[in-house]
Image (cartoon, rainbow, N blue to C red):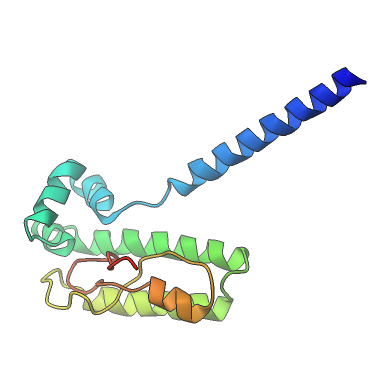
Length: 153
């Protein structure tokens, strides 16, 4: 009897550890703007981040490497996937997701990489809560190359 309990306890513990590992692995699919640029340009992430710290926005860097459209599309694809996950989890409705995605696509069209529209909004996903909370969490500077890098609350 003790062996069965021990075996069952071990099985549950292993299942929990594996479950957490899968969730952690799935969460690593989200790429930061510097990582997207690195993938598109072959430049090291550290160099991209250093340029950002020196005042060159991600959008400006993307323009200088002729990858602005690919940069925007990659970010939109990531956001779309994340929104679909939020809908599936019941944290957003289809309508809320559609509105947020449309808002991002509109801002992406206006983004020319010049950093003229920084702070005009964008989508930085930190979802959970009401649509109003989500809209606030999804803010921060898409136009102008900040592309989803908002001020964190």
